[in-house]
Each structure stands twice: as C-alpha cells, then as structure tokens.
Image (cartoon, rainbow, N blue to C red; front, side, top):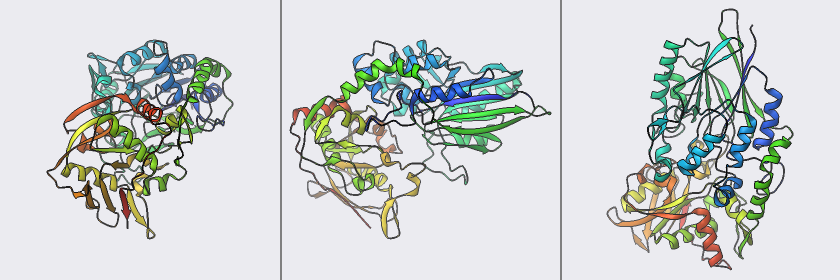
Length: 509
C-alpha cells in the first residue's frame, strides 16, 4: 500500500457556530467549534477539507446577522476562512439571502467554490473540475448542486442565475475528466441526497430531480467517491462500486474517507461518519463571540404574553389533533395577506410559544425565513393539495400513525400541512388520493370549479415537498414580511394574545 490520502467533508452546518442549543442553552455535540477540533485531530498534509454547502442560514445567529449587520462579513464566512477549507460547494439555502450576500461570502471565505452546474450572469460559480496532487496521486474533484434550487427559492434570490441538471452535468464532467486527465481518484461533491432506498432501489419520495444521488451512482461510471448532503442523514457505504457519504445537519457529524492504493494502483477506500463529540475550538468560539452574545440578547426580546397553550410537547399529537399554534400562525398570515385559506407546516423540531413570548420562541419554531405567496386556487386543486397532505398518515396496529415513507433517521413532520379557512376530514383507511371525505368553506361543500385565494410559504408555492400543484397557479401577491417579521408584528399588536382555536381538521380511521 502507498501513503494514505484522507478526505474530510462537512455539510449542512446551517450557521451553527457555538455547540449549544438555542432552546435550552445546554451544550450539544454540534457546530463549527466542535467540527474544527475534530478536523484538527484528523488533518495532515495528505488531507483535503471540503464543505458541501448550506452554511449561511438556519441558526439564529445567521438570522440576527442579516437583520442587524448584513453589511459586514458574516461570522460563518470568517469561521470557514479560519478553518482553511480546500474547496467549497454551494447548497440550496446558501441562496436564501440573494446574490449580493452569497457573492460576499464567496469573495471572503478563502476557499475556491467548485459548484459547476450553477451560473450567475452567465459565469459559473466554479470551474468544470479541479485537479490536486496528494501523496503522488492525481485527484479530480467537481461540485454540483441540486438543480431544483430555482424552484425552491424566491425568484429575486436567484435572479440572473441558471441551474443545470445534476445527473447530466455529472455525466459530461466525468467523461471529460476521464478522457483528458486520467486521474487516480475522482470525487463528486453533490449538494443533494438520495431519491431511492439504497438497499431496494425503491423510490422513497417522488422522483423530481431534487435528490439524484442514487441515479448518479447507478448511471454515471467513473466516480470513485460521491459526497452528498441536503437530507441531513448520517450514512456511508458502497453502492454500484462507488463509495458514498452523507452527514447530519448542524455540524453533528463529519465525513472521513481514507484512501490507500494497492500494488495494482487501485484505490482501497474506507468511509466513516464521525460524531463531533470533541471539545470546542476556543478560536472558533472567539470569532463568533460578539455575534453570538448579540444574538442571545436579541432572542430574549419580549414580544407579548398569552394564556394559551402554544407549546409543542408531542409532535405527533400536535398534527393528529391540530395544535392551536397552527391556528395562530394561519390567523396571522390570513390577516396579513387577506387570503381565504392559509396552509402551513409545523417544522419537525418546532418548540412553540411560552406564556411570556420572546423572539427565541419564534426563531426556535420557524428556523428558516420564508415569505408567504398569495395564489388563486380552484376547489379541484385545493382537494389535490389536501390529498397530498393526507398521504402523511397511515394505519398500523389499528392506530393512525406517520407513513413509513416520511421517516428516515427522523420523522419528516415538515412535509405535512394544516389549513385554516376551511373544514375537512381525512379518512386514513381510504386509498391514497381519495382520503378527503368532507371539504367545506363556510359550511358549504366545495365544488371543483369554485375559486379561492390561498396563502402558503414560498417553499410550498414553488412546489417544494412534492406539492407540485402550487407551482403553476396564478400568483396574486408576494408578502414583503418573512414569517419571523409577520409573527412578531402579530403577537406585539395582539398583546395579550388571544385566539379562538378552530378544530377544523378531523383525522379518522
């Protein structure tokens, strides 16, 4: 065997810098500070450190930064520069703040961007591929991003940008590299995940181009290692002769791939996913200290009070029996947009609102900043939307529970919406597509041809989460306030907060 080559990869850190929970304040094994310590233990002169995107939004420190100090270089950018990444790929959430903030990050992060299938003003974010020589071996790398970014993002965030299909790009790039470079090792860094079960090949969700990792491994010959992300799962292995990795979100794990070459010159590859259970890097903590302290002060800003029970203690029951929190959120959106109907998801890790409501409550409930889009919808499409929501449920052991296809390493609660402005019944024992047995607006049955206005967030409005029916509906308006601003204003102007909770959704066997 020759010298060992090591690839370290992070992905989907989502701006978590300090290793602490923003809900409880307790230390957790997450964030850049712990990642940095682990990387320092593993890194040597034969190591490449790669990031696979989604760093600029998610944690409250990112929200505070862009609200209060967006003219400055973000703490996430400064931390990544300090960690001396060799290459970075872009993720879909790196576009959340638009081109100006993204370009500021790329100009100051101190590492080349290798995203090759996305362009801004006709200039690719990264080269077609890069070549590095390590331990006497020629290594080729290229980066690609899920090509559905354009649909998932607000249009203004991706203006003048184009995104090419990930599989097509991989096919052309690998063919070119193998023909021109004859590398000893070829690595594809893909901000996307797997659309199919890796054991059976069966679809785990609708095949829509968002997660094409399985197809890349099966149909694109010549790749040795596929580094994936986006889905926030922890896994690694070998499939179709290719090694793959994927890490958890928020910096909870690190991908470590060791490569040695046997006497025939063939790579022997060992992938591992390592937990970030080290001590925090004090230098990283210092870089983020000022921004973190200001963020904590902002999070503790009092907004109002309520006697309502708006906490989420049981995520299953909060959806099976619609939580009053969703009634509140939908009411706030309805008041702001004038929509007849509002549909909202409750994110998987939503905390809810305490009796003394602070900014922390809202940020911990709706982690990502989305705006609401007003659409025109017919009764027919409304029913299609609700049928898609109803797919979330199944029956097991005589009880209603979450369908297995919405469970991987965590339950994808964010794929289920609850609507207000209407009343409806979901009969889970009926076949998928025929579960909405009652659907009424102001006590009257809704027919296919009747028209309404409906407000959903920009992710749903773009078809995100398999809700394609929204993508082609006529847009009537785009909210100027994101969900944080909208809920903050509503709570402050309705203090003390009182709402009449409507149990308008019945879910039955």
